[in-house]
Image 1 (cartoon, helix red, strand yellow):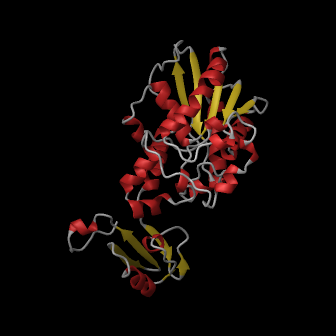
Image 2: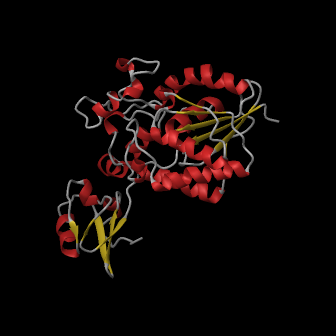
Image 3: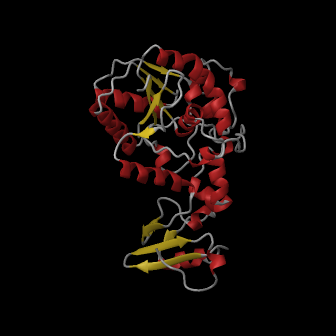
Length: 324
């Protein structure tokens, strides 16, 4: 039987998560879907009978907002919340604000996966000329923490996240757990992955394959030494959770997109990733795609055009490609 139980989760979907952009330390609220995810999480935890004594969050709004919505759905709004920058999302440096799929197009899916998922690879640091530098480093929430602004990170690997998280875990969270309190941690994808790596002893190599969907609670059951009694458990509809995990894994991949004739592509297309904004009709698609050095397949289907980018198309030869 578990001596201690802890619920950990990645916040609900944020506005930039929906746009597939690296959000990191930019403060974004939840999207409409993210609000629903947090509310559904609260309903599910209530149905399972969880009663929390203390909640920990990062200092970013999407983490705090998720905690508020969960507690409201559970009728536990009175539960105290403690926030720390040490639970913040990983600092993605110069990648902040960029679209993951466009990055995959320009740098390759494997490189983007390494930047996103590896343990000790740090992305390029943010510079003072970065469009979000001032917004992050002039934010007063970082002027009252336990670290000077000069020592705030400019980019982080997952290892760096774990290094700045562990003091908070050991000095703040663990004593509360050992006092018998039921803890909820509303954090982020990478701060949650870092904590799971530490608690479960996940190897540097295996952590790259650990993916956490938004708004899904994770139950950790621990013995008296805070060692796990088993692997972490995703709470909820397992089929839906696996679909959500795949959605996160696909964020750094190249995708096909549909758009109606005569409209701007609202998300991204292969051409847009090369700096081309175009009105999508059959003529302009053909014209613009001819400028690209990559293999792009397009086909008119009624009032829609299907555009498929195949990264490995050149290795398939010049034959007709399958349309998926």
